[in-house]
Amino acid sequence: MVDHLSNTIDTLLDRTIVLGYGNVGLAVRRHLAGWPADPPRMDGKVVLVTGATSGIGLAACQGFARLGASVRALSRDQRRAEDAVGEIRRAVPGSDARGVACDVSSLEELRSFAQRFKAAEPRLDVLVNNAGAMPDHREHSVDGNELMFATHVLAPFVLTSTLGELLARSAPARVINVSSGGMYNQSLPGEDLQSEHTGYGPKKLYARTKREQVVITEQWAERLKGTGVVVHAMHPGWVDTKGVQEAMPVFLMLTRPIIRTPEQGADTIVWLGAAPEALESTGKFWHDRRPRPTHYLLGASEDTPEDRQKLWDLCSSLSRP
Ligand SMILES: NC(=O)c1ccc[n+]([C@@H]2O[C@H](COP(=O)([O-])OP(=O)(O)OC[C@H]3O[C@@H](n4cnc5c(N)ncnc54)[C@H](OP(=O)(O)O)[C@@H]3O)[C@@H](O)[C@H]2O)c1
Image 1 (cartoon, rainbow, N blue to C red):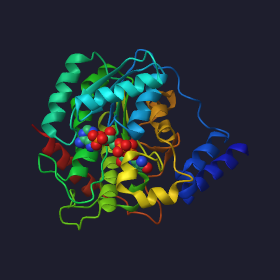
Image 2 (spheres, rainbow, N blue to C red):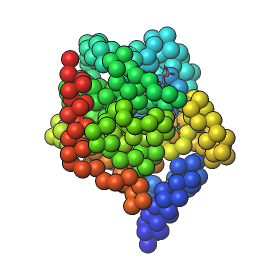
Image 3 (spheres, rainbow, N blue to C red):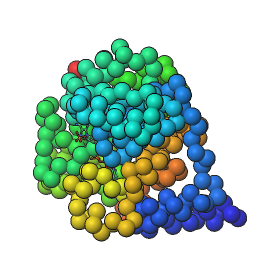
Image 4 (cartoon, rainbow, N blue to C red):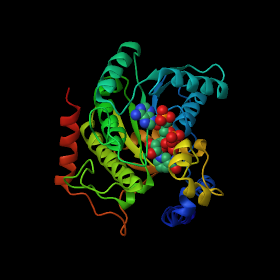
C-alpha cells in the first residue's frame, strides 16, 4: 500500500515535468518509501568523467571522490582539467583526482586519448559520458560532423568502444551516458542523422542528439551483455549550470526557484556509478535513481528497428580509423 502510494507520487512528479525535473521532485522522492539507499564506498575504483570542468560533470567528480573513488576529470584542455582537479580536491581534501585532456568532438583526439588512458590506467570501473554543448548556430567538429552529434553521440560511442576492453577487464563496470529529458519530444530522424537537412534550432537538434544518445546506450548495452559491463543513460532534470546560463538564460530566469544545483543533478550519475542495483540491469534510462520510460504517449514516436540500425551503422562507419 505504502509502495503503491510512493510509486503513484513518483510517477505524478515525473509526468508533471515541472515538479519532477526541478528540485521539488528530488526532495519529495528522497522521502518516499522505496527510495534507494545511498551508494557504497568506491575505494580502489577508477572513474572517468568527461565534461568535468563545470556543472554536473564537476559535481559528479566531487561525488565520486567523496565515495573514495580515483577520479579522472576530462576537459578539452589540460590546464582546465587541472583547475577541475583543484576544485575536486578543495571539496574532498586528499582525494585521488587527475586531469586528462581531450576534445571529445574530435575522433582523432578521442582515439589518441584512449590509447594514453589505457597505457596510464590499469583499470576503469566507471565511464561517465557527460560532455555536452548547445551552440546557438550550426557548428561542425574538425571531422565535419555536426557538433552536438559529435559530442553527444559519437564521443560516447567511441569511448565505449575504445575503452570497452579495459572496462570489461575491470568488471563489473559501468558506462553512464548523460542525456536529457528534452529527448522525449524528438524521434530518431531517419536518414537525417546529423540533422543537416533540418532547419537549425539549437533545442530541437540538441534534443534529437540526446534521443540518439539513448538509443546508442541501448545498443551498446545489448552488445556488451555477458562482458560484465552495463550501459545506462540518465537525465539529470533541470540544473543551474554554465551550459544553461549561456544557452537558455530565459529558461533559467523562469525556473530559478526550482532549478536543481549541480550536485542534485549529479545525484543519479554517482548513484548509478556505485550502487549495486545499477548492475542488475543494462540499457535503462534513469532519473532520480529509478528507470524511466524512453517514450511517452504524447511525445516522440517509437524508433523503428531500421532507424536504430542506421544510427548504429553511421556511428560505426564514422568512428572507424
Ligand atoms: N543543466 C541541465 O539542466 C541539463 C539538463 C539535461 C541534460 N544536461 C546534460 O548534462 C551534461 C552536462 O551539462 P551541464 O549542464 O553541466 O553544462 P556545462 O556546465 O556547460 O558542462 C558541459 C561540460 O562539457 C564540456 N564539453 C563540451 N564540449 C566538449 C568537448 N568537445 N570536449 C570536451 N569537453 C567538452 C564543457 O567544457 P568547456 O567548458 O570546455 O566547453 C563542460 O565541462 C550535458 O551533457 C548536458 O547536455 C544538462
